[in-house]
Image (cartoon, rainbow, N blue to C red; front, side):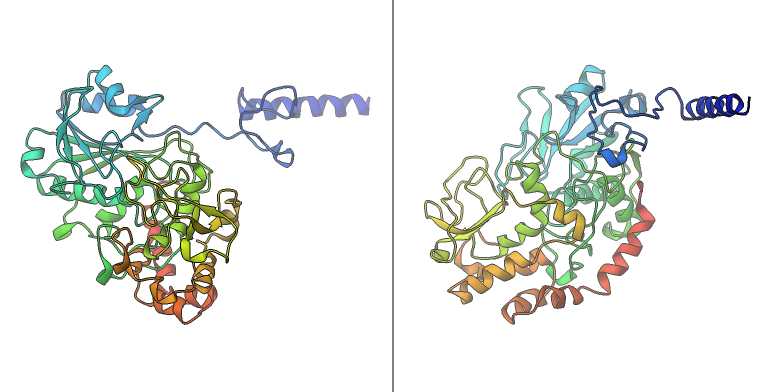
Length: 424
């Protein structure tokens, strides 16, 4: 009798757990059932992760708001809903899109890095396309005259020198000045799981860095928009009216592989995760994969012959790198295409070891940071954001010593950032 009562109690308890958890609850793992989330064996008792839904995909939350308004769209090839562009999808939903605004690389993404793009008419839709990476980077009063609301839908990669957050700032400044609202369709940050790098010193403000944030800022575009407003960083401390359609079921620590490449030279998931570390090589006399099909995942120079066995040869590639550094010359150096990028999740740090190693290996150290040697080089101070880094590398400082110089600025930023988070 006691055993029967115990069994009855266990059955009732199991029923109550299933009712509390809902119809999708599971208390056992069936290996015969396909597991799209690739749950590890040790995680089988944890609830399944809900499907991530980008802001753009949640059309029911914002299309009614756009109806009856003249809409401007700040978009590029990452602006998609399923397999269609956000522009095409919203046109089918009878949203009145009157103008398209394109950032670096253009609306269709076919312009190389740093190449100015002219205003045009989008051939597919017939809508006027205004370039924000040509004659002007900030929408003018005339650009906005026939726009009631601006929609910003661009995939960022969470790095200070990736220019789309600058485009966001310029759009917000123009809309704040001319009393237009900005609707942000938020997207995940593939590098959102950590914050690292020195805070940008204002003396090195440039087109690849406008605000005092670290290299890896740990924010989505929507969160960064809130920071721009909240910290008074828009011109004349204006506040822009913004609405944000949040990403559903997203956390900063969630791995996210982009469905399309965010720009011509970030063409793999590997390159996106290496980018915060390897883009620093733009400020050195080394080729970092431009002129190959694997940019930001290899680094080298002809002068390193005999130091490294791995080699590659940059060539002219239309739409990616027409005149890469060391074009048609064999470069020797590091192959990071198979580097275990999960290390970034473990360390929560960019990798400075590679630039320290290659400086030590360089036979012509006086050339290493000399941006006068090639128009394809950037200035290292604008990339790293501070004055000391070049001197620290030349002096042979350790990574630990270099990192120590980033404080207390980095810690203060991490605290400030918390005010603007939309996601855990």
